[in-house]
Image (cartoon, rainbow, N blue to C red; front, side, top):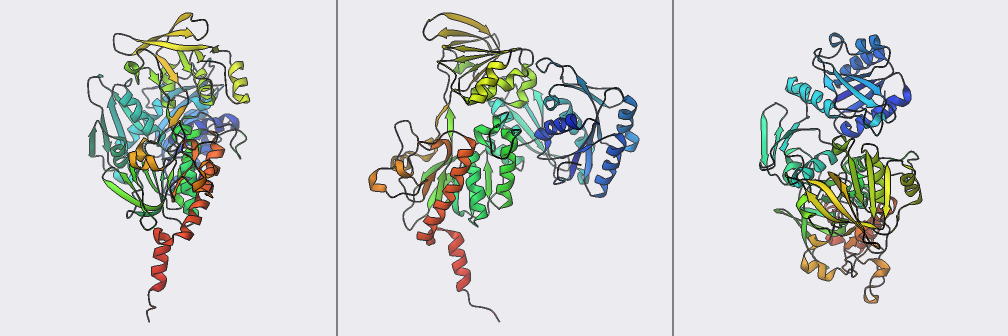
Length: 568
């Protein structure tokens, strides 16, 4: 068996091929690992024994999936409803030849109630999960409150190709929430229904904020009290690392993130050069593991919440961060808010934002663009990773690069080797055209030196042009005191003017305020660098705490406890 049984519910996967079984497990766990243990079996008999053993451990098998090739009798035995827990979903997986992922489809359910789902034989992990969503939702509806446990059912009603719908599915999928989708006209408001464990409609959210979604879906680790040692604004690799190291040092920490865990890296299909993962790891998986670590050490977590403004304290007063209607205080604040995307400067771009133009890729969208032409704008690492990911599904990916590719060598080699990726160096998008429904259907491309014009038909345009520091949340007063360079990157350590020296490496121009990650001047936008900066920031905070103990509750509480007279 694989996957630790950290959930009360499990998905059992049976396949005799160990390599393919591991790839399928990886693909299923990527989507469902947050809520389900994914347990593998080598054959039908093994899967039945595992299902029985899980029940004895108090873990309920919700879905049993088996791979069918030539031994259909064995697969039928594995999916025999009479031998499985009552109500468990059944899925028949079929390997199929694939060209650009075209073999993997949405699947269907037969009259016997068994789902049948083809998956690409060359990349089993890229199977289409929509049928799995349906089977899990059907199990949930038929289960008793005791069987459901803490699982919730979320259904989104919205027109898929709108910016608001994109934000919601990016947030829910980034947080590992299994959700259904009901297509609505674009003129209708977005509606999200969250059902409680007893099957009643617990809450209907109309045009919800991400913070409201986070609370309704129980994604928030609501902190007890409002005073902390350190508040981290930003839940990307740098912010999560800061929280983890703060927690291990016994600091009372809170992370405020305006989206899902991981920030920009969570949308990366593969982080290939991170220490300790020779085969690479998806950005989403890395982010999920980091958040689990932070929670292990008692770090507060507010996803989907917008921080700001920051009210700077003094040598005797803590800094204060406003989050919605709440105000939190801390001896130290760490700015880890990263970058916001550079927007496409082209005629008609704003009109098709979320309706064909996107500033990040989403795995939940990949099935919808299968066999269609895609355009990627940008020549850096993010653009290269996106192009490679999209090439596994699109008929053709055209990369438009203003000058030349400027990405890591291994990425450039992979991009240029991929047969259905065309690299157009020296070209930019000049204009976006919408169809009669207001959705993107064509772009005009212009040569930067030759000024020649071309038209490309596409419904999917991904712009990954880098970013600018996301510091607007600081507010005007704090931003005036926290020094930054001409581009808005926060100055720290040796980049600060002489009158602030000597300064701790991550310290800003304001004592007790630190900066890490992409928002900071002079550091490369790499995951490994961001994690290292997070750990360094905690060292700097501990030094500041030693000089200012009255600002930090971890010290003041301990001092007060030590001062209490003994009883008895």
